[in-house]
Length: 251
Image 1 (cartoon, helix red, strand yellow):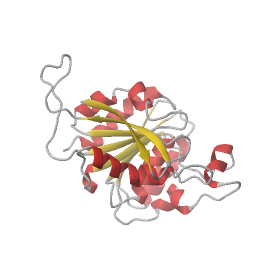
Image 2 (cartoon, one colour):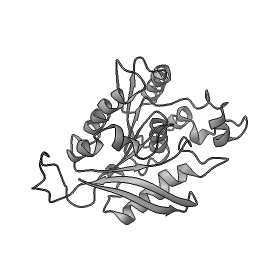
Image 3 (cartoon, rainbow, N blue to C red):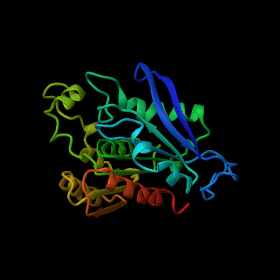
Image 4 (cartoon, rainbow, N blue to C red):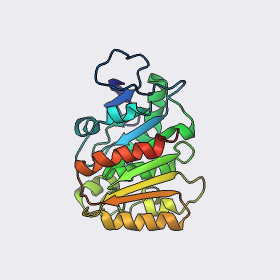
C-alpha cells in the first residue's frame, strides 16, 4: 500500500484542507513482513472513512492498522477532516456536508484512479463519523452502495441544545429533515446496505438499538453486531475489521 497526505484547496470549505489516502501498490514483492495484498485492476473501490467529534483525519492511521487491513482487499481508503461539524453544512461555519459528500469524491477521482460506480463506493465512521456515514449513504443513494456506523451518534435532536449544535444549526434551531437519520430512513427507495455496531456498555447503545429497529421495520438490509465494549478504540479497531469483511470480503 501507498500512503498519501493530500493538501488541496476546497471550494466548499473556502480554504485549504488535508486528507489522508491509502492506495494499493501493484509491485512490492521485496517488502519484508507483509503478505501479498490485492492490487486489483481498473479503478479502485473506495471507502470514505470518517472520524469522531474529538478527532481529525489522522486518527484512523494513528489508532488502528487500517492500511494493513485495507491491503487485504485491494481498496482505497480516504480519510478526510470534518472538524466538529457532524458532517453538516454549518450555520456558523463551513459547508462540511457539501465538501465530504460531493466535492471530496470528485477531487479524489481527479487525483487518483478511483471508480465512480455506485457499487464501488462505501462510507464508514465512528461516533460522529458513524452518524455522518449513515447520513451520507441515506442521502446520496445514487452514489454510495453501503455504509457502516460504529458507536454512532444517531439522535441529533436530543443533542441540539449544546454549543456544538448551536454552531451547526443556530440557536434553538430544529434539526432539518436532511440531517435527521430517522426521517431519512423513511425514504425506502434504492436503499443502501447498512452495518451498525455498538458496545453494550456504550452510552449510545439505546439510540443504536432504536435505529436498528427503525431500519429493519423500513425494509433495509441491516447487519447489526454488538458485544461487550465501550466508546473507545479497543472496540473500533476490532470492528473496522468486521466492517471491511462485510463490505469487501465477498468480492
